[in-house]
Length: 148
Ligand SMILES: C[S@@+](CC[C@H](N)C(=O)[O-])C[C@H]1O[C@@H](n2cnc3c(N)ncnc32)[C@H](O)[C@@H]1O
Image 1 (tube, rainbow, N blue to C red):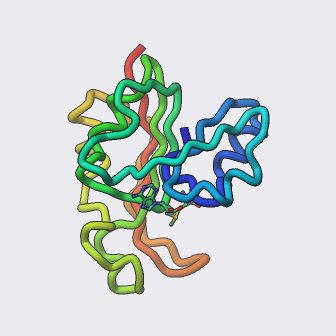
Image 2 (image 1 turned 60 degrees about the vertical axis):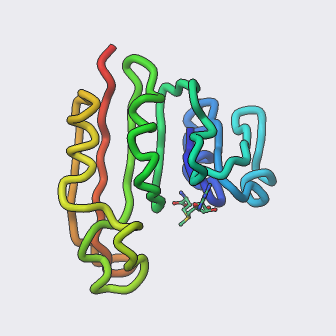
Image 3 (image 1 turned 60 degrees about the horizontal axis):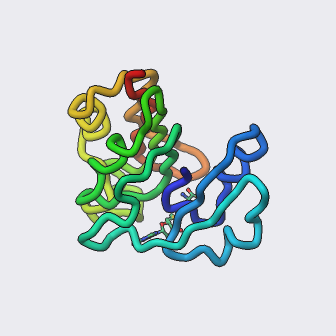
């Protein structure tokens, strides 16, 4: 699943690799145009009190440039055994460089590590970095696995 997929750049990449992808966003107008045999667009508001993907399971979940903290814990719970979570978004400190600057949209120090730990995910890779290009930004990114 490509969560908050936007135009679907990661859905496309994963489809090219041969995966079947569920591409979720509140606005699927852009992803709809690239929907294919391998990419299925689903329109959901991911910030309602009720989690719209309750009970769903995915072998992999990709999230980039999106954070809605109240439902963050849903993501590891939706991984099937052996499933992988790949998450990258802006982190605290990014406000020095521009948007996003709202703390609600910025990961706290260690937040992805804590998410992985609280769901017993095995961390394959993790970074908490300053990235100079394409524009200065503070980012956290993680790749973590659920036990088989
Ligand atoms: C900055 S874009 C990131 C898109 C994509 N992940 C990428 O990195 O190219 C954030 C996405 O979150 C989606 N989004 C924001 N609020 C949402 C909500 N309440 N429910 C579902 N999607 C939402 C937006 O429609 C937008 O496509």
